[in-house]
Structures are given as C-alpha cells and as structure tokens.
Image 1: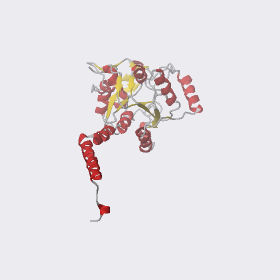
Image 2: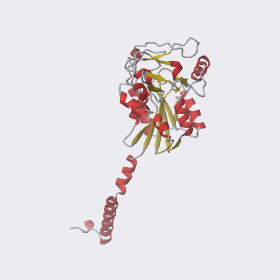
Image 3: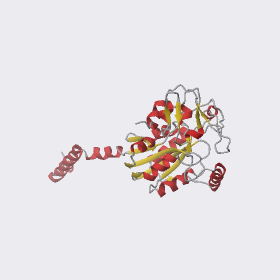
Image 4: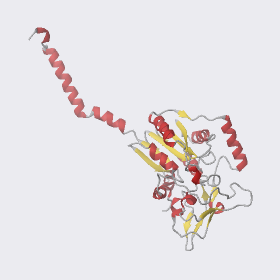
Length: 313
C-alpha cells in the first residue's frame, strides 16, 4: 500500500468521532424530531355554514393536523379562545357582509396564532367584503394576515334559481387551489377592492335599508312560514344555527333572531318552509326565483349540517 493512501491516527480518530456523534444525534431523534415538528404545524379552521359551501371549503383547506370547528357550536359552548400555529375562518358573505353570528364571535374571540387567514365565500358579487372583514376583525383585535374570497353556488333564493346556479362552472377547483397554495406558503395578502365595488355596496345598503353594522339579522317569525306540508321530521330544528325552530304537538313553529342563512328552507325535504310574502315594502319582500328548487353543497351531507349547527342541549 502506498503512503499517500494511508490514514493518520489523528484523522482516523476524528472520522470515528464524527460517526459516533452522527449516530448519537440520529438515535436521539433530533433529525426526526425537526421533521416531525414541521409536519405537526397545527391549524384550526373555524367556519359558519348554512348550505354546506363553507364547510366544504374548510375541509379542503384542512391539512393533516387541522381541527375543524363550527362557529355556532363554539358560541353554544361559550368557547372563544383558541391557540394554534395557524388559525383560519371561513364564512359566507350576505350582502357583502359577514353573518351576524360571525360578527359576534370575532368580537369576543381571542385567536392566538402566528398566522391568521380568512376565506370568504360568495355567489355573485363580493364587493368590499374583504375590507369589511378587515375593519371588523381589526376593531376586535384580531388582525388577519390573509383575506381572500372564492365564488360558489349562489344560494340567495329570492334572486337566483338553484337549478340554474348548479349548472354554472365557477372554477371552484382552480380558485381553491390558489388559496390552498397561498395559505400553505403563509402568504400575507388582502384581496384588492375597487372603488366601484365600494360604491355598489353603499348603494345596496341604501336600497335595502340594512344596518351595515348588523347586516342580515332578521326575525324568523316575520320572514318564514311553515305550511301544512310539514310532516314534523324536525330537520329544521337541527340545521338552524340559531335554534329558531321548535317541534310542537301540531307542527313546527319558528321565532328569534335569524341569520338568513337559509339552512332551514334549503334543507326541508317537504319544502314546507316558505318565505312570507310581505306587503309593507320591506326587504326582502318574500318573493322567490324558483320555489321548487333547493340547494345543499353536493359534498356535504344533511348529517354534516346537523352536527355543525345543532343548538339543542
């Protein structure tokens, strides 16, 4: 053997030491722990859903270590403090505004996370929904790093035919993939809003007479009627996030603050729940585009909505 290939005693010991250290580190789990911790990045997604659109989006945004929590259920339990690496909220915009329950929730919530994101679903026009949420959440002390929107099937029964809506390709998979990528990269971004969109919202508020600090907070007993077609199945008593429906000896009665999410009317199998036709000129007046068409997200079951919204003790 030539001398230039011989290994010195010092070099040999140094090499052996490196091997020993590497073995100890590996056996101690330092490498695997680092990788393991990266995979365990905890995410909480809070959602509000009436017809399943937001629950579907929330599920699609959930990773391996994600906890999905229904806002109505959190309100029912009085739970408002949450801690995770990432916290997201998914809700539908009603008249470009969040449901009143979501407003109430964020005003009380304490979201402890390094990264917070919000995804807002809408059916036709989002207008300045992003800026509205930003103002509401900032005022409550919950600043969101990312706020984006995604268009879904429009379930606003007074203005849209559900049978026609489900035929429209709204490019949900493509739009959803972009949002998933943004959030996985913890992108800091608020979807831009134009002055035209702000103006459209102002005109809508003036025309509808809604209070912009409240939004669609209606009275269930004024706007909904339970007809004789009711068979007492009780589905409405489970899917209403406010628990406004009560099964009685004769049929079902409804009363209380209403989010106008339409979970009740959309999910009644007998179409026994109808809009009350109002003659006082108030908004909305009770008309409906297609009384025979109803909608629930195709990926969400009736049981899913019951579990998400049930307010029974």
